[in-house]
Structure formats: C-alpha cells, structure tokens
Image (cartoon, rainbow, N blue to C red; front, side, top):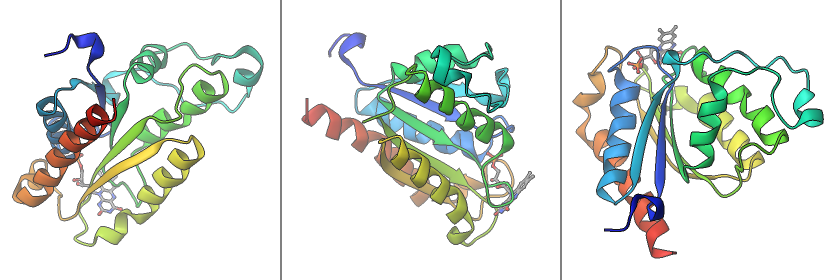
Length: 195
Ligand SMILES: Cc1cc2nc3c(=O)[nH]c(=O)nc-3n(C[C@H](O)[C@H](O)[C@H](O)COP(=O)(O)O)c2cc1C
C-alpha cells in the first residue's frame, strides 16, 4: 500500500441539513467505494460550518482572496488537496439546498483568486429527491454541468435517487446505493491506472 501522500484524496461534501439523511447516505456510499479503491476519504457537513454567501463585490479579482474570512478558507484547502469531490445535495424546489448553493457561490472567489485549481478535478454528484421522476432533478444536474464545465472540471458520475423522502428512504433502492459505491471505486481505479 502506498503512503497516504501518494494516494488519491476524495472529499465528500454533504449539503443537506439532515444528518444521516439520504444525501449523507449516498455520499457515504461513494466514499466507501473510493476507500475500497485505495483513496484517502474525508467528509464535510456544510451545516456544521460557518459559510457566508458571496457578496458579489469582486474583490477576489483585485486581492486574490475573498474578503469574507470564514470556514471556507479551511474548506478551500481541503478542496485543493483532493482530486475528487463528491458533491451531495437533496433537491429543494428543483434546485440544491440553500446551504449547498451558498457553498457553490463561494467557489467564485476561489476561482478568481486562484485559491483552488478547479481544472481537471473530478466530481461525482449525489442527489436524492422525493419525486419519483428523475427529471425533477434536471435543473440541479444542469446547474452542476454548467458550473463544472465552466471550471473545466470533469463530471465523472451523477447518482440521482428519486423516491427518497424520509431520512433513510434511499436504502430502499439498493441498485442506487450500488451505483454510488461503484462510481466511487471506478473514479479511483481510472485515476490509478493513468498514473
Ligand atoms: C424545503 C424542501 C423542498 C423540497 N423540494 C423538493 C422538490 O422540489 N422535489 C422533490 O422531489 N423533493 C423535494 N424535497 C424533498 C427532498 O429532496 C427529499 O426529502 C430528500 O430525500 C432529502 O434529502 P436528505 O434526507 O439528505 O435531507 C424538498 C424537501 C424540503 C425540506
């Protein structure tokens, strides 16, 4: 086994306010697949962090940093040192949660300030929703596609889990859990084989 510093790092980010809910379960599955593949994994719960919304002041263009110093600085370091991000949010009114969108908007300063090198990083999306139609997640998956493309990141896999309302409902869909675990394992295997 390689030392930790040579292993791919995977950062799971949970954007649901419900601890142990469907988003966290999905993110955990992806992370355990990645760990099985040999990655070092870490999980962040956005609601446990103080993250202020972007003010749109564009100071990041001038000073190369965000004027708001909060828990995003530590999170940016973790994002920078992780090659793969597992981005988890439930669907709230066809979009991501406010917590997740607040986090996402802060990437703007990290991008303009050069604090995080987004290009080439891989993302796996983990998205549960109550609706039984997968299409109700389309605005959110579209948002991710656009943002990741713009940042020249690679969208490696999207795991959408329709029909998940109460915390834990996603466990009723073992095929979805399986696809989450497989995505986590595969992303590592494909990275190791290209080293
Ligand atoms: C404020 C709010 C808005 C929601 N909006 C939608 C929606 O537009 N479509 C949908 O299918 N489910 C919607 N849901 C249901 C959640 O997506 C669903 O319960 C999900 O499994 C929650 O994930 P969690 O357990 O990780 O919190 C909404 C839930 C809340 C609390």
